[in-house]
Image (cartoon, rainbow, N blue to C red; front, side, top):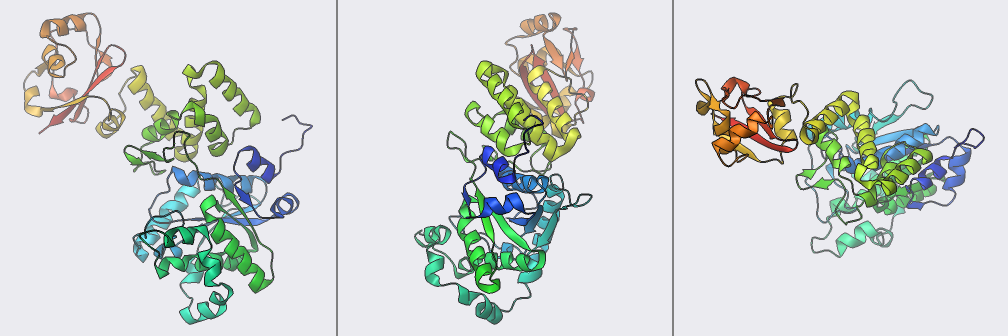
Length: 432
C-alpha cells in the first residue's frame, strides 16, 4: 500500500484476511465511523489457550489496532456450565478453584497479544462470574427468561443439533444461550459494549444477545463471526497425533509449536499467514510468489512459524525453537540443551535404552555403541565410519575409532545424541 492510499478500515482488513463469516446488518458502517467496544469470550476449561484460540485473539488484535476497545471475557460463570455449541456431549463441569487457576493462565497469554495499558484504547479483561454468580434464579427467569421463547431457542443450530443427537441436551446447557445473552447485556450496560465477535458456531448465541439488548434497553448491538479453521485435507486444525497444540510452553514446547506451523501444507499456508500474522498484502504476495516459484524452499511456512512463535513465545522462545530445528535437521550443536529438551527435539527419531552400568569404568567403545544402536552393521564398519569423520557425539565430531564413551558424556546423565552423517540421528536414553 502506498502512502497515498488510505489505511483499510477494520472490516476491509478482516475481509482481506478472510476473517468474516457472518456480519450483522449495519455493522460495517458503524465500525467505519465510530470507535466501539467489542468482546470475545474465552472458555476457561484449561489453564492455557490452544492454537484454535488464536483466530479470535487475532480479531481482538485487529480491533485494537484500528482504534477500538477490545474486551476479553473469561467465562468464569458460564465455564461452570459449558457451551453446547459445536460439542457432541456435555463437558465436565469445573470447580471455582480450578476456574480461578485457569483464568490466571489465560490472562497471561492474552497479554502477549493485547495492550492492557499504555495505549489510548487499552484492552479490558472481564470475568462473567462477577455478574452471573449474584443472579437469583427467580429474578433471572423473570427479567431475562421472559424474552426468549423455547421455539426461538430450539431453532438455533447449536441447540437443534444437540437435541437431534443421541446424547441429547441437558437443561443446564440449554440455559447457556440465556447466560451468554446476559453477558452481552451486562457489558452493554457497564462498558457500552456494542459488538460481539466469535466463531461461526456462535452466531445463534450472538444474535440472541443482540435481540436481548434491543428488547431490554431498546439498544442497537452487532455481531461478527469468523470462520472455523480447518485444513484443506480435512484434519481438525490445532490437532496433531500427539494431541492439542497449546500456547503454554509447558504443555507444547516452543520447538514443537514452531514445527506445527512449519509443517503447514502448501495449500493452507497463505490463508494461515493472513489469519494468524500481521503481515500485510505486499509481504503475503511476495511469500505467495515464492511458494509458487520455489515451493521446496518452504519460505512461506518458515515465515509463518517465525511470526506465530515470536508472538506466543517471544524472541527467546523463537530462538530456542530455531536452534532446536537446526539441531534436528541441520546437524547443529546440542550444547545448551538439557535432557528434557533433547527428548522433546528427538521424540520422533529412533532411540535405545542402555543401562548406565554398561558405561562404567572407561566407558563403552564407540564401535560397540554404533552397532548396538543399529547405526552400523559391524564393528569394523563402525570404526571406518568414525575414521572418515562421519560420526558425531552430542553434535561434536569423533575422530578416534578406538574412543570409549563414559557415562559423563551423557547430557544431564540421561541422554546421548549420536549422529551418522548429516541427518541420521539416534537417541540413547541412559537407564538405572
